Image 1 (cartoon, rainbow, N blue to C red):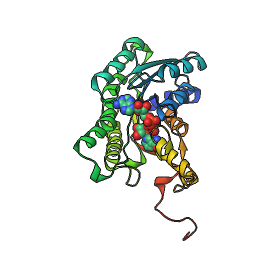
Image 2 (tube, rainbow, N blue to C red):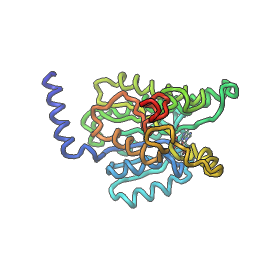
Image 3 (cartoon, helix red, strand yellow):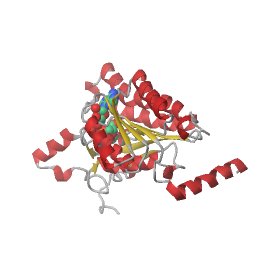
Image 4 (cartoon, helix red, strand yellow):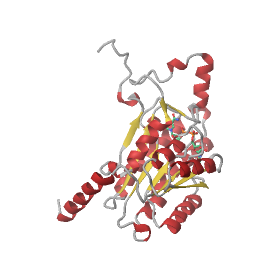
Length: 293
Ligand SMILES: NC(=O)c1ccc[n+]([C@@H]2O[C@H](COP(=O)([O-])OP(=O)(O)OC[C@H]3O[C@@H](n4cnc5c(N)ncnc54)[C@H](O)[C@@H]3O)[C@@H](O)[C@H]2O)c1
């Protein structure tokens, strides 16, 4: 290890011992944060607990976002939470929010590329248009996060940032790891998100910008509401999530906690990974526990 690397590690260890869990001074952007039971909204709260300087909460419209920003700002004094309407799959919209953060606060440290849509369609019902729409919202949004937020994270000086660094976290899915958890177009878009994060980590080599994908299993949110409502109405809610070893479905804060950890310097050596947060669903071949082992 060169002496430069040794010095950097020594500084890092001192920092981690002092405040690695906190996001002190950091400026964060979260996309897809307006859904009331969504992972984005839960992430805004788990980031807020780590006391960053700023959290931009964004979504296609301002629905629920002003209320969210007010709640966070009042519960966590010192944290500025700002609501903005941003299409996460639009180059100009993502560039504009990143530019705003840079102009006002002089730095960008955390970008959570969480916005996404799903479909429950089968291959025969999908077509070029539906496929490209899914890829645009789910995969292009992750690409823009890497390209635009990554460039801003390298800027130092103004805003008190003394070195290139940052954490980009994209919400992929277990559907991006293997089949059985989503429609063909959804699964393909989430596999693209995972690969973009791996390639992104490589592209930012030596900049201290980390890129990771998080792969939720079945989580009760706005996206899955129909599935949960259907099961509850049919009286089969107790069956939801029974295929994973934790034997239950997950809730948004369980994903958001891992995102906040990835955002923090506590995850300083975690880079280029796709982390499944799925109760163990993706860890096993399909077996009936107790039958053979
Ligand atoms: N809920 C699950 O079981 C589950 C599992 C795996 C992955 N995910 C992923 O988690 C992420 C969050 O989803 P959720 O479960 O909280 O669903 P959700 O529907 O509750 O929230 C998704 C949010 O993304 C927003 N959005 C959609 N397109 C957008 C765009 N172009 N620009 C900005 N915002 C946009 C929606 O308005 C919504 O607020 C998604 O990427 C989803 O694919 C969810």
